[in-house]
Image (cartoon, rainbow, N blue to C red):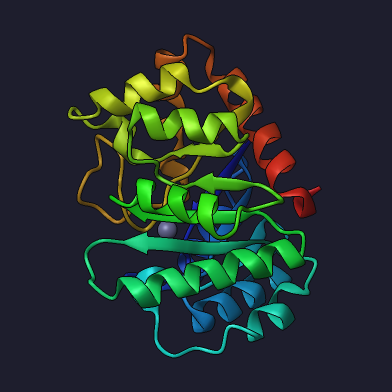
Length: 251
Ligand SMILES: [Zn+2]
């Protein structure tokens, strides 16, 4: 059985959330999923889904593209819940130029995660270097960190590996253009990689362009098993153990 370490059931893309919740509940290959918050509203929804469905865990946080004068102190209350396993997704995104705001939100949320002894889920859109600079100059995650849907760069990868941070592979690794991701996957040690769908976004080959769902994680496992020359079950098991080590509250 598999853990999908990063997905969004409560996304604006879906207009029938219950259908996607049922698909996961009825899928005997899926042990659990982390339904990742993007803003306060989706974080609260994710907690409610997790309270009602035992396969679902939640993370809470403000994504850099969804910043709107939100009171981050609420995260203390939201995270004080056995089903909330991380602060995220948080990070930097270079498609918007409100970098000062984004940086403030990121730093504050890392501090909250450290106070609450929670790991963080990082979103980086072409900002790995800037995020690493924040870790070095301002605040480092103390209780674990994963770069979700990692944008491949060997120097950044070395920094993450040296600090024991995790690298998560999504549908991108199945694309024909994924040479660099494959190179990264070959280097990442067994104890530091996770898998995710980032559904409903980022469908893997051969389903690119369609609405993505957690069941499609099988294409990502297959690709990784080919790249890392391990069998399917082994990749499934390794990534499950890694997810449980990083997201301790899942145990
Ligand atoms: Zn996401």
